[in-house]
Length: 407
Image 1 (cartoon, helix red, strand yellow):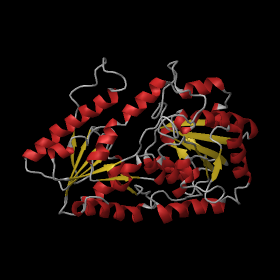
Image 2: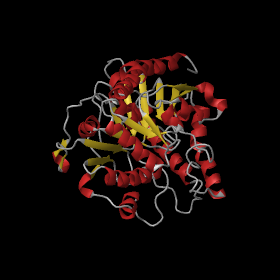
Image 3: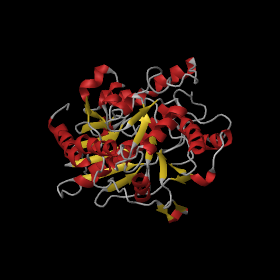
Image 4: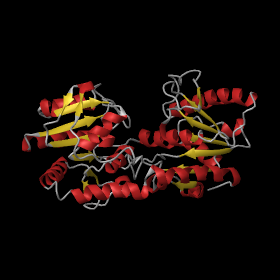
C-alpha cells in the first residue's frame, strides 16, 4: 500500500499508524507536514511551507480559511513533485480543519481520502458558550460559522472520516454521520503503567519531591480557561491553606492552546499568581516535559485533576487513567463518555473550586479506599482504549477504505 499522512504537526495522531505501516516492506509511507523536527525511521517525511501568511487586510472571519488555502496549496506543490516521480497513493489520510487535505482530490482523484475529524465549531451548545461570564457577540457567532468552511469541504470531499469519541462525532452535521467512524487513537497502556512506589525526582528542572506524601497533579498543553486553569488555580490557593504538606505539580506551557488570550497582555498564569496567594515552595510549574518525565509525574500523583469545557478530550486524561491515577475531572460531556463518578474517577463542577478542593481532600484522606477507583480507571483504558486493541482496528479501517467508499 502507498499511503500519505497529512498533518501540520508531526507525528501527532498518526505516530503509531505510520510506525506500524512502515514495518511492512510492501508499504511506502509518506508524511507531509509543516513541522521540521522529528522523524520516524522508514517514513519519507516531506515538509511543506506556505508561500505566505494571510494578508493583514483579509476579513477576520476569512483569515483561518485563507491560511487553510495557503497550507493546501503548499501541500499540493509538494505532492505534485511526488506524483511526477511516479508515486500515486492508494490512501491519503489527513487531519481536517487546517487545510492540508483541501486539494487532495484535485491532485490524486482516484486515491481514497480519509480525514481525521476532531472538532466542528458551534456558537451554542458546546465550548464557546459554556462560560456564562463570556458573552458572545454577533460578530463571534458569524466568525464561528465561517470557521467551519475547510472542515465542511473535507466532509464533502473525503471518502470516509474518523472521530476519536462519540461526543466529538456528535458535533458534526448529522447529514455527514454516515461517513464518520468513531475510533480513538489508542493509549499506549504498556508505557503508561502504574508505579505506586515511584518518588518524583526530576533533576533536569531541579525538582525533588521524594519526601512529599501528597502530590496533586495537573497536565495541559497550555494554561487557559478551556482546560479550567483559572478554576484549578483558585482551588490550589484554597488547598494550600487546608493542607500544609501538599505539593502541586503543573505540567504545561505558559500559553493559550485553545480559546482567547487575555486582553491585558498577561498570561493566565501571571494573572492567577497575582490574584491568589500561594506558597510557591509547594507549587511547581514544570513547563513542557519529555514523555519519560511526564510519565513520572503521573506515576507519583496522589490525585490528578483534569478540567475541560465541552470540547476535544485530551489524551492526558486517559494517559493518567492508564497510569492508575485517581482522576478528579469536570462533569462535562467529553469526560462523562469515559469516567463514571466514583467508579473509575470522580466528577466535579467545572466552575466550583470549592468542590474541586473538597474532592481532592476526600481522595487524599481516603487513599486506601481510592485504590479500587484507580484500578478501574486503568481497566477502563485497557478494555476500551488500549493501543494494542485499537491500532489493528485503525489499520483495518484504512485497508478497508481501498475497497469500499464508506466505512
